[in-house]
Each structure stands twice: as C-alpha cells, then as structure tokens.
Image (cartoon, rainbow, N blue to C red; front, side, top):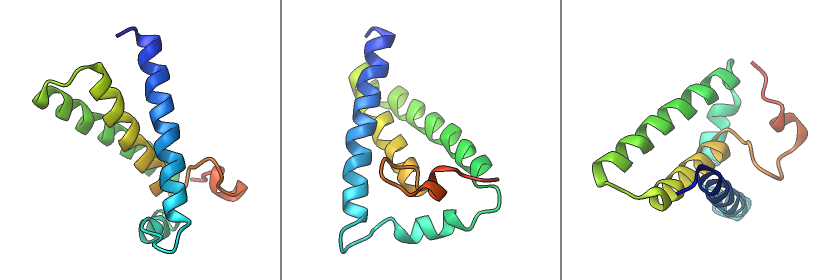
Length: 104
C-alpha cells in the first residue's frame, strides 16, 4: 500500500475510534475514567505518553509480524490502539483546553 494512503487510512481510523471512545466515555458507563484519573495525576505526563506511544507501536509491530497481517490490518490495529492511548491520556477531539496542553 502506498505510504500516503496508509497514513490517511490510519488517520481516519484513529479519528473514528477516538470519536467512538469519547462518546462511550461520556455515557453512563465511563469505562476509561479510572485510567484517566491515574494518568491525570502523573508528574511527567508528556514523557509517559510518548513512552507509551513507543511501547504501543512495538506491540502493534509484533502483532502484525506474528499474524502476518497486510497493510490494511496493520492500519486498523494501529488506529485502534493509538485511539485507546489517546483516550487514556485525555487527548481527544472534544477535551477541555487544560487537557489538551499536557504539562511535564
């Protein structure tokens, strides 16, 4: 798959899953709120976020290699996991300004 198309597909999937996770988190269930409370109290939130991005990327690459997934499968898994990581660290589309500016 063309890298440009791969990036677009991954971005769209991240957007769709982020929107879905935010909607679920604003519902009565609030499944991500306990994790967000923990990540909200971190001293070096930005450092932990970027470290988690690297770990997530390595795990996704491992899954893709083990299951011999094609580029579309890779893009879907990558989009899903990055959207989860973003909701854990309160980096969504509709978050308040203080959550968007993660401080160290």
